Amino acid sequence: MDSVSSPVIYGVLGFPAKHSLSPLMHNRAFSALGIPAEYRIFEKSPEELKFFLTSLAEEHIRGLNVTIPYKEAVLEYLKKESPEVRFTGAANTLIVKDNDYLEGWNTDGIGFHRHLITDLRFEPAGKAVVILGAGGAAKAVTDQLARQGVKTIAIFDVDKEKSTKLTAKLAQEFPAVHCRCADALEDIDLRDTDMLVNATPVGMKKDDPCLIAADKLHSGLLVYDLIYNPAETELLRRARAKGATASNGLGMLLYQGARSFELWTGKDAPVELMRQALEEGVKKL
Image (cartoon, rainbow, N blue to C red):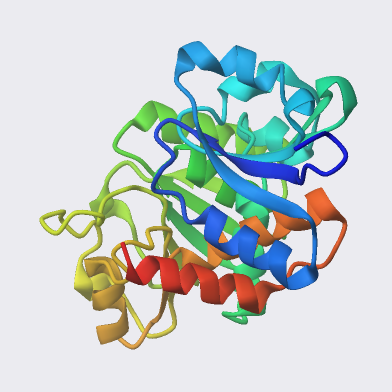
């Protein structure tokens, strides 16, 4: 194919990346809207990263999603970054302009918020939130929750230094939000909490412990586990048994991808078609 007839290329960059469900939803979206583009998997080793990121325009690549372990590594190649990238120190979406001018975005928190308000009918403003974890996912989630005006955020992480740093950064950037660290899981009191978010990988394995005791959960709580495989973690099972609203992270994956699609194409994402593609993909995992 010559440069005139070649389709525009988008893709996901990671190492590994073969497990990604993103090609399913993006290629479904391109096809539905008649956009001459295709979405590929780019599994690149650390040694290949620099050459790849400095040859994108030449290869007709106009946009990338970025996953582990490169969300932070790509920052040095950016010419422009969104406020979310500046807060989290990570980019999951790249827009490629001419001469490999890269714009970096982080749509994870945006996708999380969009799922909350669109599908779960949960408005974060004025709410009290507890976050388990203080890593990259927690940074994206807390950043967006703070932007949306939550009242309080309490963070627990087994690495106290990480939770302390994230709490301090939130307090500095969003002084109207009351932020604090929980020293231990036993210190977490959910009685006056509106939402509990698991932003740790605990729950992905069958023999993982449940971080929250069942007697702490209540029917007025939204329990959101960023894990989507398995579809129901032990935390979500316990939450539903208590009458709480419970959600896994598939909606966040959907809406962060939809936002990436919109940034790349300037078109509204066909969300329901993308949702169908994701659900079909999850069943095959």
